[in-house]
Length: 118
Image 1 (cartoon, rainbow, N blue to C red):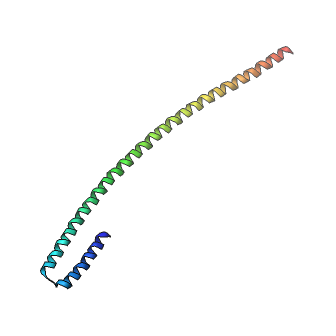
Image 2: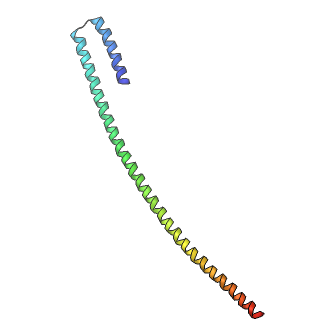
Image 3: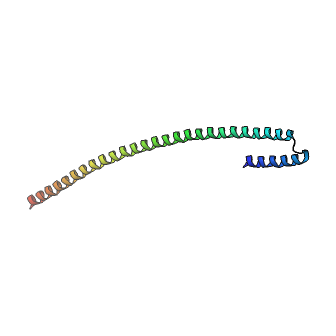
């Protein structure tokens, strides 16, 4: 990753500098400062990642809650439609039953009429 690559490059440069300048205290202090800066940058980056994860968790929870509400509304709507379909079906069955009775009455009346005509 970029941090490791930057650190590696820094260490390579430091080794070259150490060879050129010798192992003096100034080079060591410079390295400490640079490493301290890298550590601070890493802590800031880590904190930003934690904040981003927390924000994502909040958004994910909100999305899941809205999805659940949507599913509940959909299921309520389906239940209402199924109830209406059952009511219409029951009404249709009553109408069909009444039509059968009327057809039987018509057949019976025709039979009576035919019987009288004979």
